Length: 239
Picture 1 (cartoon, rainbow, N blue to C red):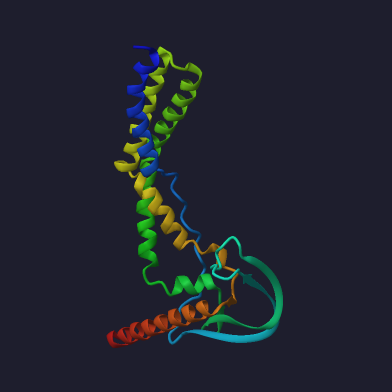
Picture 2: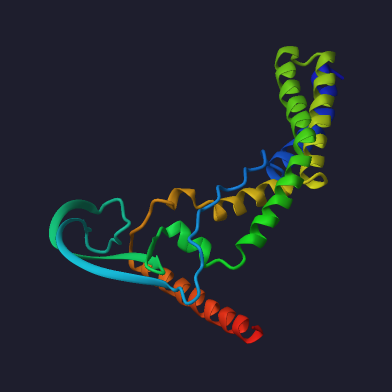
């Protein structure tokens, strides 16, 4: 039995383990806590007011024409696609929000109208802690796998390559343990939740464009105002 045949069997299993670990357990460092959004002080009877304004003006709009031979659909490679610019009226919706007469940014509106934000931040902290626990096995696993791959390239199909294959297997196991047992899965969850909670890019956004945002902001404001009315009524009943 030659060296290639002898090494093919031990190589296959660790390589498969490593591929599965990387495919299922790709995880990185824990995200930071999202920056705090400064909010106005709540006042008795204060409400969020949302105002939308439609404006219509003539704009240059890109158009696409598709000409096809008879019997061909528009996705056929035999069709000819031409582009042109046409001036036509375009209506846009611009929406702003205020609280008790004070202008609100889109980020402030989203934070004020999310009753579960504190619970989400607490969950993010737990996920960040669990993700941090996986850092050591992840780094060890990556170091062993990358180092063994480099050594394998230089060692070629020699007895020294067996040690590289073994190191790769050990690294993939360490990486997988970090993902499945030490909190690595929570890293991806933490990143997704961080992206939802991080509104720092919208702190200076005081006017939002689009019918979708107009409807969303109005709905959030109505829910917030109704909740404040109920809370103030309950407080008044206890006094």
